[in-house]
Length: 188
Image (cartoon, rainbow, N blue to C red; front, top):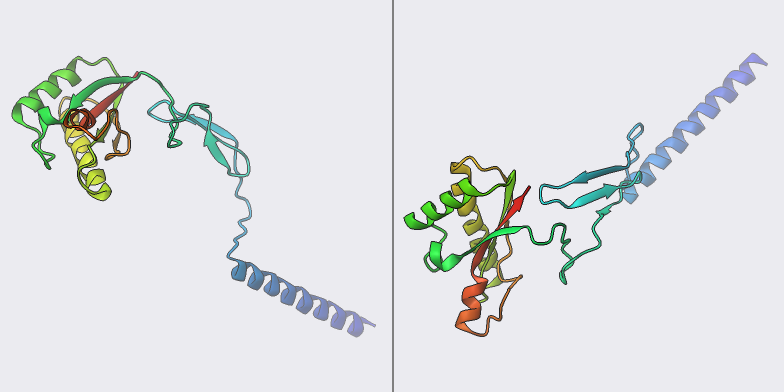
């Protein structure tokens, strides 16, 4: 009887091991992964630009603000733009090097602004390709951020939007000039 019980336990263990290996193989084929002990905690936090985010216990994440632009970008704090610098005053065409007088103007601005941190967003007109404009606007925003850091200002984020967020029509020279800008958002 003990021998029969021993064979049954051995067979049951082999069956369980085979079933576990089969489940593991199925998980590997499906690309799923089970992690024991990992737990999501519902959380709410605020980004440097003031956008509130939430995450549920299943890991799903979203924005708490009901306001979005037409492109679906959350608008978290309206009217927080504390400076708009026309790019033509600071940069040569197709360049992201700031002129000496432009640096002095920006340093004065960052020293006098009453903010805990800044978000710098670069924009271009539509004369070049989208990829080129995205890179140029990001590099221009980084150049302004470097000037801000030299004054001791805290930079929360640097963004380049290229030609994607125009404030005027790109059909005229005046409109294109308005679209070539660097926006400075003050976070208080």
